[in-house]
Amino acid sequence: MRKADREVKNADELKAILEKCDVCRLGLAADDVPYIVPMNFGYEYTDGNLTLYFHCAGEGKKLDILTQNPQVCFEMDCSHELKKSDRPCGYSMNYESIIGNGVAEICHERDEKIYGLTRLMEKYSDARTFEFPERELERVTVVRVAATSFTGKRLKKG
Image: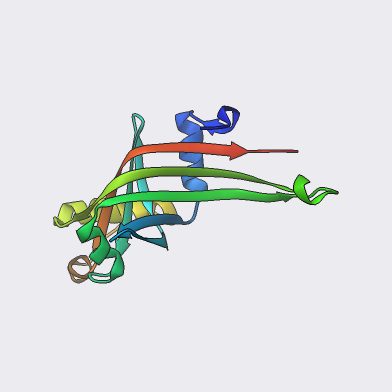
């Protein structure tokens, strides 16, 4: 990282950023053509290992690309605050972000799907227990991304 003073390394601070971010942009590539899609996400962050979970329909461009190339990148950001200046190049933006790379895998087993969907629901819901009807489990696709690398970053100017 070019500006090491902005790097977030503390596990609790990284988890806080994961909680604050509402959307994760998933970057894919097929035939050297990039494709990026904003998605809701769930996560598991344990012992420095980050796994992201996404859900989608059973068919579509994302899945077509992931079938060809499971290598992905991801980006999420939050805590935005524009910092104005009296000169154009003095403007700045406070933010927190997590950016990384990983390998995507489609979860086929019922228990894997439930696990991923539970991580998603824990992020966005106040409830802590969830029931997923079999019909919906059969129709939904859950994608797990095991991060191979990622960094947290923060800029907070007064």
